[in-house]
Image 1 (cartoon, rainbow, N blue to C red):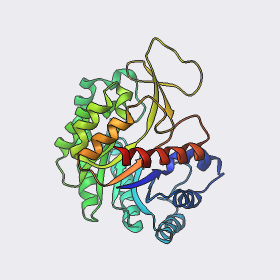
Image 2 (cartoon, one colour):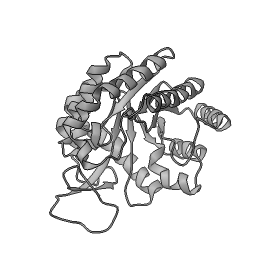
Image 3 (tube, rainbow, N blue to C red):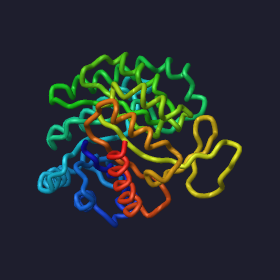
Length: 290
């Protein structure tokens, strides 16, 4: 098992320029990480060849795998020109990964933030053809480089386990899989245990996180809470300290035989470096106990 972090854990420091992406790599290595996932918020690589090469060299120097690259994307467009522009944009990111030697990319398939009415199953089915066509085009382009592309249970439009599976089946490409996030199912009020169990067979990478949860009728007040699709309250927590059944979820993953990358995400209120470090230690301990 290879435990590591997403650079998104430290996105506040990246955006404030208190840390660079090179600093994050060095910090991750000092914490004992085996890999880092690149999420280009607070920095950009696709339009900065020099920085991309610095990241590639620094990861190699540190002995850190660059496990995945994750970026927003949207295949649902009103015009063919906009759809083709999105395909061309994503191909540029695939080219970047080829140059950097990264062999996995997660791209969204719809906008992360959508109006409540667009979260319906009917809306999903109306747009499935475009979602599948865009995913096929990018998977086929990436396949020539040996790159796996992934859909994640990320954003109301495709966050349910059944919707992820439906896209996977419609695309039908050997190199199109899923980044399985054990926490994100809760954003659409699906049991994390159920969603994780259903999608484990399709997972190429697993994200782990924790949330605090409060029902819709128990408003917790201020503090970066956000709402699920049905109005319940969530807030990011240090891994192992929130309300998710993380011990049971890790046991489920371990018993499946999965032995790839485990990527920690932190999205809470606490100071991000110390919270991520605590989460890493909890993840290592709980994985061994699972």
